[in-house]
Image (cartoon, rainbow, N blue to C red; front, side):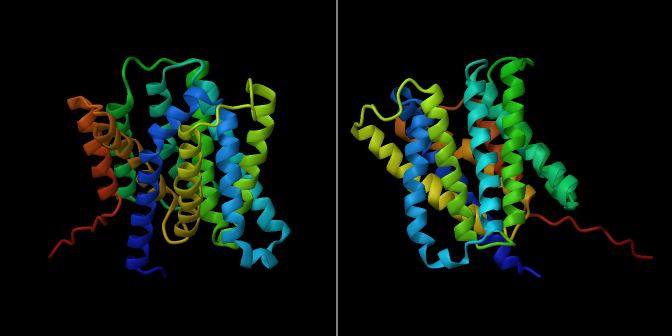
Length: 294
């Protein structure tokens, strides 16, 4: 049995991952204003793969076909989620993309049950509903319609959900460091292929300070640290709880934007952020049945 202390540590470190992604959101946004998306992903994940190679170096003798296969599967899920999200932005508003992507928090518990019969507890189910409501209030601006952009984003949410639940499964079966390494390498290769096929340029970029800062910081904190912590800590918690914790990403992004560029939240958005925080707390609770005294 996994002790409560290990579970709490896992959840807190997963929260740090959501914060890392949220804090680097503005940086990524600025970088892709001048750099094609897939080219940026290539440089980010290429650097992350190199760093991860040195971190995983002493485990290289444990490489086997299953580890490579698992890493490739996770890499395909992760890159496909990035790709569908990028294509979706061409057809619908970013606020809608942000909201529907966050719906992976609904997809995870049902997919986890479908694939692995993972039990859905009452508090986690309640936390999921609260998180979705919070996401809607925080990210949405305008009516939600159904079109090709929304369909692509829903597919993106499902792919992110699959990455989360299979990370939890695979991390218990193979070396975590090698699993992350092959996941990052897979995303690097796919990003290069897509960049050469779809981007206007891949290597002839404006290599300025903002570009290098974004690549280095996102590679170290939002990629190597984030995916290593996610993969290692999902051994000690459920995929559903991981997804709920990851809804803190837009909250941390909003808080960081407030302090960095004075971007304010409306009262509705603030309520949404509070609901997401509440959802992460509800996920930690245990509902106890009341005993009737006779």
